[in-house]
Image (tube, rainbow, N blue to C red; front, side, top):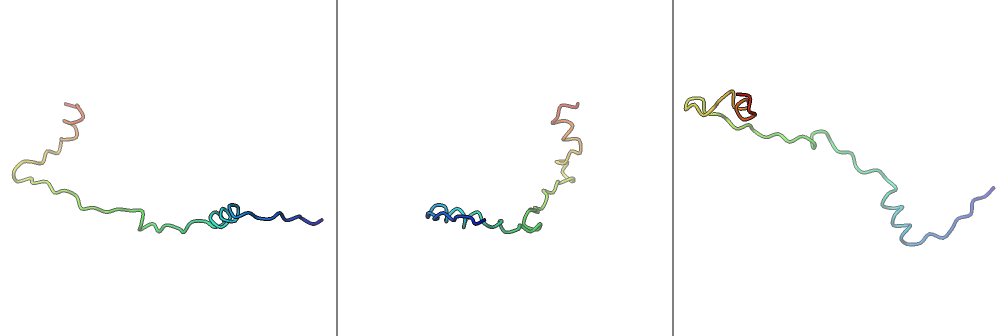
Length: 59
């Protein structure tokens, strides 16, 4: 049993070249973004530990 090969057109060749391999793996270090946190000035009283409760309507 032999398979017949059909001529390959340019668009089909381009698709096979584009989709014939998997993308490069992404390192875990490249998926994480680290930013420094904003510091709160507890001396002047700007920091309120219950801010989330006040903003969310819990009081």
